Image 1 (tube, rainbow, N blue to C red):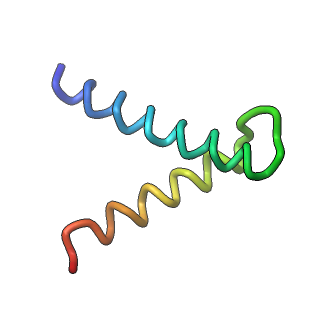
Image 2: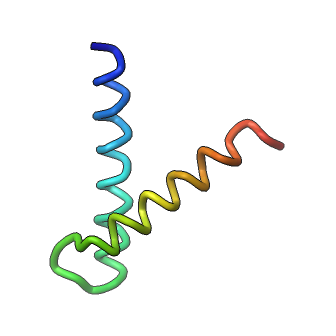
Length: 52
């Protein structure tokens, strides 16, 4: 049950970023490319998190 909470939080964050990317692209909806880019940004954030 705890894991599903983290998964839904991560999904919500990815969708927010994808929506922003779609807006910047001038697209009326989120496309596969927007989701892909949002996931890549999330992975970049997770890779560098904690390193300073």
